[in-house]
Length: 412
Picture 1: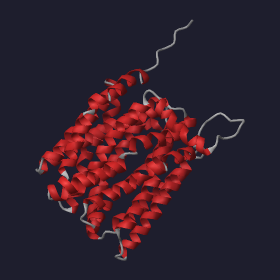
Picture 2 (picture 1 turned 135 degrees about the horizontal axis):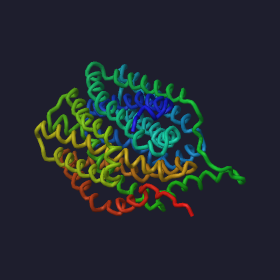
Picture 3 (picture 1 turned 45 degrees about the vertical axis):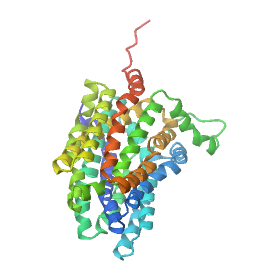
Picture 4 (picture 1 turned 30 degrees about the vertical axis):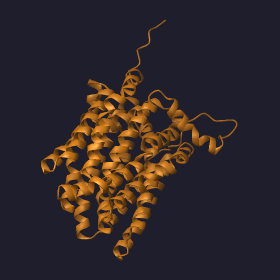
């Protein structure tokens, strides 16, 4: 499959995603580094992750109704502007030496609000720009740029800029979000949901809020997929929330070295994201997901038990294999199986279920790290994710039928 066949509109979207993902990558280290400069309490550091993902729980379901009643591109533009404004305010306060945990948490929450609107609508936009048989390829290209900017370029650059001046990575993040909004605005076409006209008018808002949740829960593939990701993201965010402590305290890394460690997994992740579409064609969607589970569990256990830098590097490489092996496949599954008129509500309901436990996971990570040490967060995470090889078996069974290519029809 040639990526050149994806079309100019897709590459405009890809460019916008590249800009905003670079902003996310800078923030990936800037937010936790600012937090540990403001407090040495692991629970307060973990609250930054809680604030970022709490909007998926509080606003996710209502946002799905907006995504199914509005132009999804316009909402994505609004999301980038909202994120840019909140981080600009934080940057100004940092420059005046008045930064505190309260404003940091508020800014992280506003970033989360923007992500609800972006992550809920972007997959629907993608599938209007490419053919169904190109979805794995399109998603893998988006995953590649996300990995490069979020993990390879953004973190080490953000850490280096943070050492020079804590406000600089935040200011550049603002610029990236504004650039992303401008590119999205240039994307030709309209991206309102495609649905048949309703003679009775739109259903009441409160009733519409529950449609996506009911749809996901009744779906034989989406329900086990969301529940599997819920466990994955719960323990994953527990580790993410205190990873800065593992890197700086357990492995003794500096701020710049912490950023570099985050970028290590990008080496494997970029390679994996380029080949995951071929992997699925040659094996199956379920095989790719099992590979993700195995490599993540190995990585978490290495972070938990190793104290050598080589162990941390190996674990980061395993994470790099894990992320695209799961994310590209799960995104394609949703895009192929869900009709457009309910896609926004399905997507935010799915994220509500799948990511709703992340704030609790982040809190758990903070409390476990404070009580027993951050390494035990990763030991627990590795064992829990490894259990998905058994717990997710119903999902793998359903995928075999749901994602099988249609049989050619025979003339009657």
